[in-house]
Length: 135
Length: 289
Image (cartoon, rainbow over all chains, first blue to last red; front, side, top):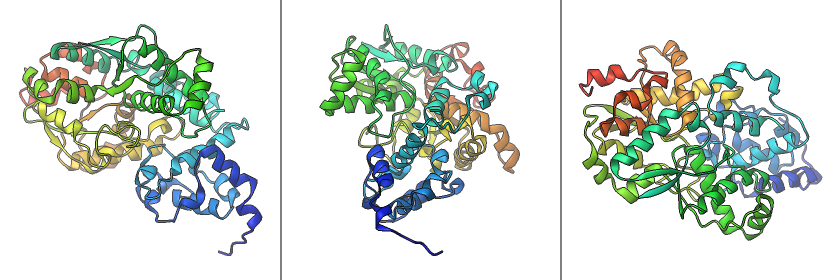
């Protein structure tokens, strides 16, 4: 795969916004891959956690914003727990979610949530789900 | 001894057995879980983005109410514990954020409450040896898998209840009540959490990994500390059994139900009827009831 990188993207406003919202510094990651190795949902991600970090280091924001990774992350914190550099990819993914949700774009439409789930599920699943998927 | 107690939403609704069995167990051991006179939802997730202060207001309100009752607050649900403990650390250590949040909730809270999980109360204040002395119906011969999940353990810097990769607190309790703890690889892995709302496939795979891992290591019972773990495991078990040759369904109960059982409480009061899986068969087989 040929990549066209530009310094303007690497230092661009979009990466800066993600760094500000998530509180994480992308350049700290040295690509050891522990996060992707420990992530229980990496198998279902279009871009696994370590590659999320790499794309953002290279200023390739569209690649991560367009991937399903942020919506598949379960927030279990295994990635941040095992990162030798103290980076929390879970926070980066939450940053991506927040940036999307703050624009008013819902991942899950409330009308699409099955009534049975609302009836039977623990309240905490509903509250947490709303916080993660609904603006 | 009275310990201020925050039940949280789920223990007041779908996980009543978790709440009742803990309160009764505490009394049998010699302390009282004193429910906060006023409380609200903790928010059910600690915001991972540091600028999201609004999500800290609900747990901050809980903590400031708790401070009026004493210097300690105990919880049962792993998520409530995680959210309250982490929020408390922000309020204690970050002056600027404390000012903003206090201004919003109209309180003057300083982060001085010590948030402890019920397991910590048993381990550090009562002592597992005392718990063992109170046991009247030991869970002898039951191989039990302690399922920690995520929120009871991580992140270590903020939670610190035990070693993050090789905890023992939960197994130590199971040993104290007479069961035989079984360590299994997925005991600190995620159940699928809030994806219950929109991605049943992932939940079934993750919860399935937890259950098959426990059963492969010999567990005849899985014990949980979180109503969402309990729900995800229970809900996934049918599908997992169907898709995993040789897998036998395993009962899943809250750790306080196991504790109450060992302390000799009436079986009818433990709330087993609200659990999806049947534990009575196992208890009869082992001659415990």
